[in-house]
Image (cartoon, rainbow, N blue to C red):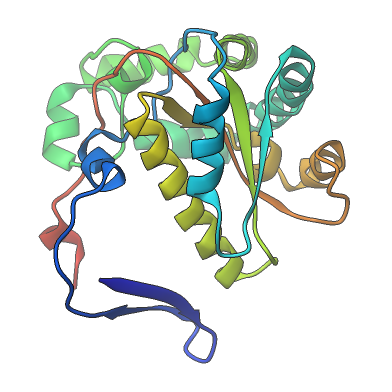
Length: 244
C-alpha cells in the first residue's frame, strides 16, 4: 500500500510503502487499457450515474473538478481551445517540438519506445522522412482548428481540474486526480484526451478561469471525454529503462 504526499522541506514527492493484502479493483484492472484517445467520439451524453462516478474518482487532495456538458458550454470552451491552438500553431518552437515528438512510423515507435505514434491520432503510419514532409504541408492553423472543433463537438463533456494552490504540491494532486478520473473513465468504457490549449497559453488562463466562475484561480488541466473507438497505443519504455 502506498501513501503519497508532497514533502515541502525536500521539494519532492514522498511515497511511503507498507505491506498489505493484494486486492484487485476496477481502476487497477483499467491500467493496461487506459490511453489518451485523440479521435472523434460518438457525440452522446453520459448517464448521470457515470458522471457521478467520474466526479467521485477525481475527488481528494483539494482538487476542484468542473464538468462542462451541453452545447452552449462546450462551444464556449471550444472558443478558448481554438484561440490557444491559434497561438501555438504560430509559435515556431512549439511546432518544432511537436514534430520532434511524433513517431510517424511503426518502426520508429518501436525502436524509440516513446513519443506520440501517428496512428494513435488516426493518421497513417508512414516512413519518417515522408511523415515530416506531410506534417509541414498538412499541419495548418485552419486544419488544426477544424480538427479540435470536431473533437469537442463529438465529446460528451469537458473536465477541468483546478488545484488547491499554484505550486508543486497542488500540481501533483491535480495529476493524481486526473489519473483516477482517467482510470474510472476507462473502467466505464469512456475515452479521454487532453485539451490543454486554454491553460498552456498563459495569456488565456485568466479569461478561461473567469468563464469557469473562478476568477483569480488557476485552471491546471483540461480533458474532454466521451465514448469512442480504441486507437493504436503509443509505446513507452519499460520501467527498468527510466529508473536510476
